[in-house]
Length: 62
Image (cartoon, rainbow, N blue to C red; front, top):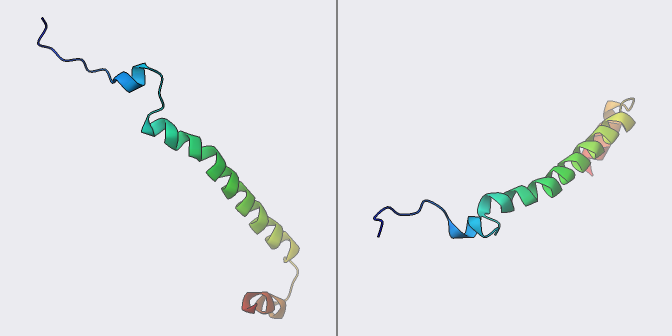
């Protein structure tokens, strides 16, 4: 009988997802939300590029 223990995790060998893999599953949707938010910011900057300071203050106050 060997006195050396195994360094292998049974759940990883059986093909089950581990915590690191679950975090990777969230990366895609989160980056999608970031892309949408950046897109809206770019659209707002494009649409408001010629607006006056008073118009900008009006949108900021609402």
